[in-house]
Image (cartoon, rainbow, N blue to C red; front, side, top):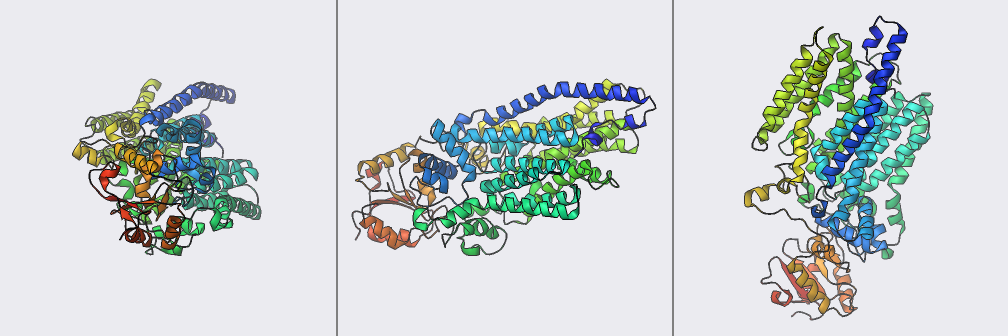
Length: 640
């Protein structure tokens, strides 16, 4: 992908000066650009690291994922198979790849929240660096810097990289895949294309089928723009697809080939099949009307939220401020970038880059808009595409602006459109940073007018000042929302991280002035500490410390101790494991004594067996003043 069309001043092609003078000026500009590039990049990376890492010792980790991380860090069997408890009796309801770096970090650094979040910080900073390198190779140095800055300051990116949900690793690996694809197209070599397939396969380990959404775009772009005959391109693409498929299914094949007795039960399935977990529970059931597709169990309301769906999802009052600030600019850049390169050779690098990132953006928008519902943080995967289109688009508009002619109007028009769009998004949250909206409009007006009214007597300093005001106007609003993540009031929900005064993490704090739950590792609440003390004091060699009804009751205990626990029903409480007969055998073999049931999860044959055959323990015996929603049963003392 050539960089020349976006980085070279088009006026140089029309200037009447001798060729030697044009060449000398171009070299001077290139030298000035590269001399300031490294300090600017280091500053962007430092900013990203500061935003992602500030206060991670108090990071709000996901209660379910952090419980699994603690378990995986304490037992290699649980680590490999993604066991929810250290004994590996049942898996997560996801592939464990995104949690492997977190588990290794906790194993090396200890059971601390910051140790679980540290890999996310590193993954986020690496994604910013990788995107800079990719966009630089496509659109030039300053386009690369702008793309890196936009990604670093995207609010949902900052919110996500301060937590431990799987999407951060997904974003990094897909960005690396896009870079390998770009290299394969520009060099005509096979190896980078195979590496691209490998990155996509590894991304599958992080977020399963979502990693495959880029494959149609990657395939179409490669077939259209790569050098060589059509047959050669198709053959190489087939090899890369096989590579992606093999790497993607490697964990699934490992689990499928392992005898059921030697691995955990696969959560969220009725048939203990890992392919059902991926293609049923986390696949078809999210798009169709069958919640039990391919033998999956039905998802909980929390995992099938319907608040964020439909074609307006990206611009609603919660998701819009997270990701959509630069959406019109990106769409305009895509449209003009492709239209202005019409008539160029099939392998034109500039057009190829716009199609790559534009296709990435479009396919995710279509899929998210047609799913059963999405958490707002899912949109973080759009951030690299929006950032790349912004960087490449501004570079293209600036080159055409300097060249003069009719196309010079694209730059001020894009700035005006983006400022007005920011006003529409921010207007729904006028109480948050009330100075922000007037400032964005003022900077946008100054930048637009300054660029639009450029005349023969306009100095270079005036033009550059107008450009600076323009860039400030489009970056100010997302920056403010991103920085809000550093304020505890806007830190976001550990289960569904979002920036600013929106989402499930902010609403209860605003209404009740409550503190956002942090779910710390290795620091149980007084109530959980008392329960753990009671269980340990009365344990007499049983394998499991206790059995819990669903992961809901096990999470705080698993975060606090590496003791094995039998999580009945998995994440939703509906997974048919263990069977009532199996539970009876465990009790008879003295491998299990206590069971903790909750009224907040549906009854199952296993929980019904506990109620029939075990004796409830008075809450005061284990440090509680009332039953609440939990009841502890002693199965060594059979009930009446």
